[in-house]
Length: 251
Image 1 (cartoon, one colour):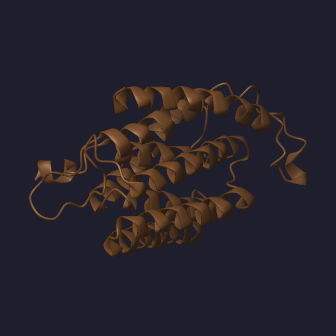
Image 2: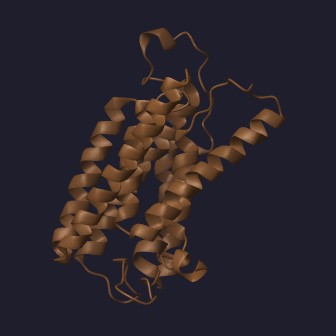
């Protein structure tokens, strides 16, 4: 059985896991007292296939895809088929668990435009602990420093944007988005700096495109609220899937 087939199987398992997750999200138990009067969000049918796609993508990227091959030091700790060690396995398990949390956070953000701390903080702790163990298992300390620095840098960047937005009288970005930037930045940092840049930039592009579509279809106004967490997550997934040498190939 090839690793590509394994990715498909894991994707199907992700769909199976997503079914009860979607049912739980439908209950709205994450809502605050002042949000309980809102209509329930519906079936959340997309949760299961979304989780399946993410699990398959992470499995392919971590277990099947080759590492960076451009000139200079290899920035990507991914491995070629047939060379799978404990570091890759630990990172894979960690990111699969974080993917479940991110899908939940996306559904919550779409519902109440909020990323609850009771999900966000455990997710951040799980990601940090899991990737730290993976980095230690690889014996490469630069990987540990890279994903920690990437999470910090992305968090600081989003904090600056949130403060700028607040200074202009807007709440387009909140502290939940800042914490999510830390999570996504650290996760992308495992794959390399180019993946961090591509993933975070793709998040801005996806968010802008969604905003334009919603404005064109009059789903929101110019001062309407947009759940920015899901576009950030889609951008991060794009950063994971693109070849780690993508930026090098452009220049």
